[in-house]
Amino acid sequence: MNNLRFIQLRHLTWLREKAFKLRGGVWTLLFAVILALARPTPISFMWGLPFVALGQALRFWGVGCVRRYRGERVGAERLTTWGPYAFVRNPLYAGNGMVGLGWGIMAGPLSVLIMAVTFFLLYNVLIVPYEEEFLLGKFGVEYERYRKKTGAFFPARWPERQEIAGPFELCILWTSERYSLLTTVAGSLLIAIKCFFA
Image (cartoon, rainbow, N blue to C red; front, side):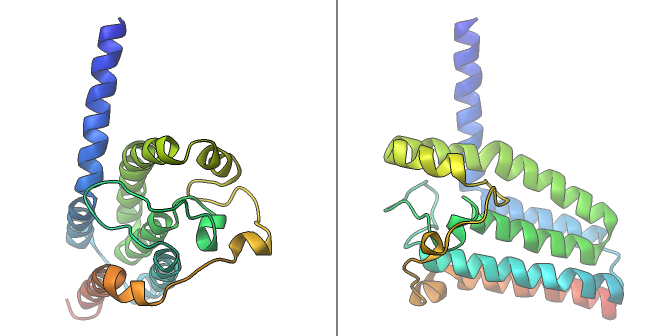
């Protein structure tokens, strides 16, 4: 029984590692499915647009607070707990979720359901537990305290002002976030084309 559990955990760790490495590709594939299913209307497009903009803004805020986040391996130079990280542990993924929700609203109800299920499986079941295992191993008790008081994707409490204040590096946005911004804009434009010109 213990050997079976060990094998299952090893396979789950392997799956989580693969999901982390392929997260951008999975997101692109998911968008392609949403675009193929999309039946946008001008009203649904306008309802979804604020979610897309807020999701990208949350990503900008989060990226400016961390030095490094891109790559195929989990890594962290420091434990970031300020800025949007004072509200949620995963603001970049929460931002992705808002962008995805916005695209889903633009595309139609079935797309919202597909986005929600995929987001839950990809981030909540696979990627976040994989990253948190690394962070717990590197930062130990400090990360455990942070995890207990901060929600994964939704705020568990309202942080104090001093918890939010911290370094923000604007120059990182160009080097680290320009591809995400391009993807967000291109995805929204493709749905707009299908809405207004198809």
